[in-house]
Every structure is written in structure tokens, then in C-alpha cells.
Length: 167
Image 1 (cartoon, rainbow, N blue to C red):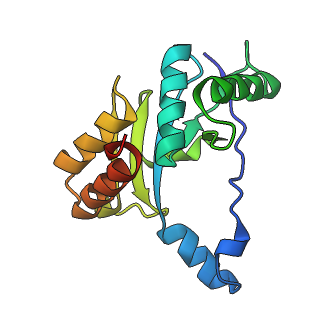
Image 2 (image 1 turned 60 degrees about the horizontal axis):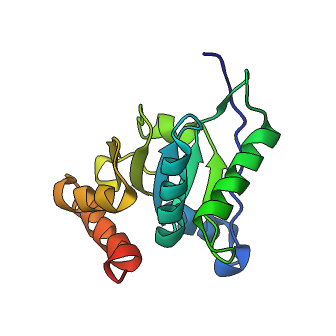
């Protein structure tokens, strides 16, 4: 299958960061991120469920790209819009990016894939990856119990408690 990939830049609200560009860049890189790597070929119900969990947990849905046979950028945008309408409150839609670098950087080889990462660091203690047919809540529990990194385990617990423990 031939893949055509369109990377997009993630836009951050600059008001939340210091004015100094070096400080801003350091702050962005130091922040933890939770990614859910998905494929447009996953069942629609699974994409809706994962998008809902991403919205609640403030995670980012990541598409690696899309096939040039059937999908265009307009079709992908329509798919994301439909999924967000089905999964999420209008005030809290899930966030999506099309970025082939994230799955490559963290060695995500299957969808869905779940990544917890500190900034862009590639040190083993700064990221952890799980792939498989599970939901985000269970991925976070697995990170919290089995990640080799104490920092990842702690962050997984924080995200889980914020998103799922009270619900």
C-alpha cells in the first residue's frame, strides 16, 4: 500500500509560555505528552471510543498518514470531524495531528499504539510505548504497573487519576 503523508505543525497557545524564545522552546520540550497512534483503517467505533478517551485525558490522536488511493486531506478532515462529533462534547473535542515522525520516533509499529513521552527526549526513562487492541484507560494502567521508567509510571498515574478515576 502506497502511503502519502502530510505532516502538520501543532499549534500551541503562546500566552501560556514565557516570552523568551529559548525558555519557550525548553518548556515545550520538557512537557509530558500522551499520544494515541491510530489508523484510518481501524473500526469507526474504536476510533470514536479512543477519541473520547483522548478528549477526557487531554491526549493527542496521531494519524501516521493516509493512503493515496482512497483518502485525501479533505476526507481525513471530514473523518476527524465526524469522529469528534460522535465522541465528544463540542467544548472538548479530541485533538488530532497527522505526523509520521511520532510513530517513527517512538517505534510504534501497530495501531492503536499508546505513547507517554517527555518532550522530544529519546532517553529510555522519558518515554514508554504500548501497542495492542486496548483502550487508553487500560494502557495507562499498564504503563503505571509495568513501565521501566519511574517518571513514566508516575505520569501515567497522574493522567489516569485526572481522566478516569473520578468517572
